[in-house]
Image (cartoon, rainbow over all chains, first blue to last red; front, side, top):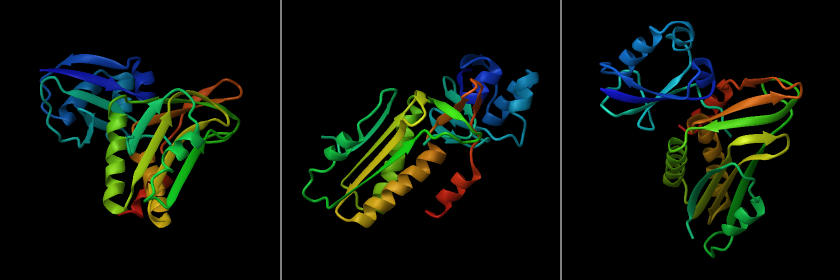
Length: 83
Length: 152
């Protein structure tokens, strides 16, 4: 299954990329995060359990147990600070 | 004329024009506006500018959802949200919220509600650029989370 993943703000800087296409078997957001953490360094640090970040699937905020589907747009970003 | 509008843009906006645009409905006795400006301190002192980033697509959806929620609670004739992104120097406007209603209480409450939810739900991120040229991402505030609690 292919996912289009977007990163914003501090996470984009930390990971050195704003987006990527990922071929994965992850069935849920949680499984995807586990896979990304295995990249180590900034990935395991920024996405550690207990760190404050949000996940959106197809532009809607979702919980970590949300299921993933082929072609989904997944965005991972820090808590928002607009206004 | 679109009664409920959302815009995300780099350019400056003219608050007067936007307020005027919502001031010609004979059923509206009240128009309330809020301007958010870049100030010289935030997470740190000596802020010279902000860099605003957002999530195109999701931002507009989130702002429309927030307006919908406000319309379910108050009688609103019209509302406008404009939020700027990109490089915003000290003193410049970041955000404008305008609400128009038959009654001032609805217009006041809805404007405050829109700002409170915009700050916690719309995917914008601020980076502070200091006078010495250094920059850092602004941390989300617990006080902003608490602010939405009163609407629940």
